[in-house]
Structures are given as C-alpha cells and as structure tokens.
Length: 139
Image (tube, rainbow, N blue to C red; front, side, top):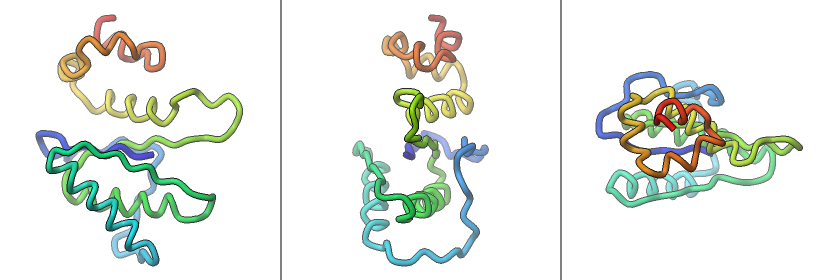
C-alpha cells in the first residue's frame, strides 16, 4: 500500500523507503498501461485538491510491486512525498500494519511542531498503535 500526498513544499530529502525497491531508469514496463493511466489520473486529481484512494491488489506474482514502483517513480519526479506500507498474511501481523508503517515514516520525516498542529484533537486516538505520537504530541 502506498500513500501519496503533495506537501506545500517540494520534498528533496530521502523518502521513507525501508520497504521500497528503486526502479532502474529506463526499466521496461509492459502490459499495464490502462491501469497505470487510471492511477496517474488519480494522482492528477489529488494534485488538483480532490481526495483520492487507490488500492493495488491481486494474486501473488501479478506485478503489484512493479506497478507500485512505476507509480512511485512518476510521483518522485513530481516532488510528491511517498510513504510505503505492506501487508503480511501471517498470524500475528499487527492490525493496521501498512498504515502504522506509513505513519511512522511520516513522523520520522516531519517536524514535531508540524505533527502536533496536523494531529489536533485526533492525536489522542493513535498512541496505542503508534506510541511515537505520545511523545511528539504530549499525550
């Protein structure tokens, strides 16, 4: 799962990519042009201020990671912040794990004052899943 959002300022620092794979420049991408076009349209709508959510799913080996890599390469070229989260299908995987991974990556990249301002009163709901918020938001 990838969260894409545009910041007010371009992002030139390294994105949280612990789980990502960089695509070599010019790597071929074949057979998913329609799907890629739909996702690019969603990114364009997001940049125009319309909320967007895209879920990339399918059977193992169908090319989800490669599609995500292509989307990420496009987004980075447009100075859009990228946060990665991945699902794991085994017993004991934490609930909401992809979201927790993305929130933690965002916390690592962001200024504490900005996080406190953005969290507002909703911050009290998150410290159980993301304990780092407790310290940052004074909870």
